[in-house]
Length: 545
Image (cartoon, rainbow, N blue to C red; front, side):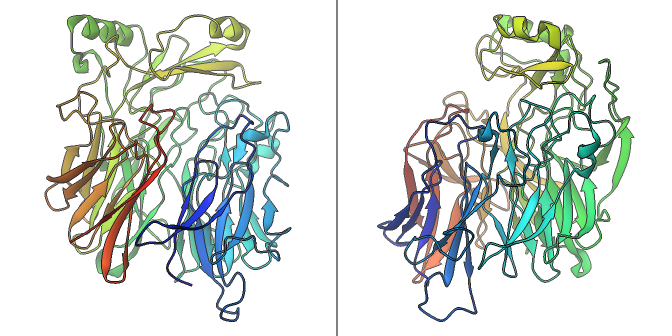
């Protein structure tokens, strides 16, 4: 049953490789329609489960589970790559069923992260397109029997949504779910209720969107929840997989990394804070019909700047500095949780983080957590519905990453971008991306170093998507940056030990394993369309001495 490395492609092909040589053993193509427009084109991997009740050598004793871009859950025989016929309908379960998705665009409902597996159940969330409609798909989490594909339970993060008019969608669990088998718990990270930037239809705090929720794995029963953002107006999904670890006095704990760069450390069994959390006042919205939350959760661990004003402006030339300063002066800018506005609002940190889906690595011997952070400033503007179509046709200062979103049928559409000056560099001073280590017992940052570069020859840090891993020998490996490099850092000091230029961007988290007495580090290097990193189609393996 052993002896295979499983990888996926952006269009959900599953490939089994020899872990020592990279030789292909088998390949499975789920036949995703390549012509259809989809919200995301990414696959963060598969999950494997060994059926202890099946006879040795029987088909599908080892099952590989895949969630697809067209919202199917597929079970494959780990030995042959063939679908497990007894699972669902010929090896597949249609997740679109009962999800109340919009039939006008089914490409907005997907699965992009590997399923979780707990005691014979396969648990899968849902990835829903941001900002296009209020009444998007339901962000439900479901558990299926690993052998038969029979639905066991369903959990809806935002059950109140059925009472809004129109029905509010999303609140989706698109990232990676964590499993605590010992305590029969799964930890579900959730995103914003739809749409991200206007909440006039979804009044209140919107629980349990923008949260981590502990569910009973066997039944789906709610155990506890912790909301990191009330009534989200900034696309502050909980993008990172919850990090399970043991805190002081053997207390089971969970660390929640957020796009805000704030880290919440909680008791894993109760949700009670282990490091201080308090509610602090937040700026009030000036948009008609919007009721922003008067407070937001604060924690002592903050990994990125939460304020950006004229005094913080940076640029390579005086022209760039002036452009950025003028942009801020014309906008609303009151630090973190500045609500979207009609004149435009500065959002710090921006919607890519803080910490994104790359999640964290943890060293239990040093109680040290390592994450990659982004430090870009976003700019968002709400557009009244009657003006949206005309505004959409105008030229904008969207030199990089600018986009419009309909948010239909709410009262406001959206324009959002990042604050890049005419030089196409950020308006805030570097570093623009870092690898950071924090002591989870004390909440103190141990080290913080630039990750990657946007200016050749300078350690500016880079926008990054993907996370780090950490070995028992005290080495942190990470890629994720726009520049195509895999890097190694000393986990004690953050000193860069080694770097290797990959043939394409590696917007992925590396993995490590031991095979026949030798340790390997493997990373997928395929590039990233939205980041504009170098494209390719590679799986690169390294051996450790």
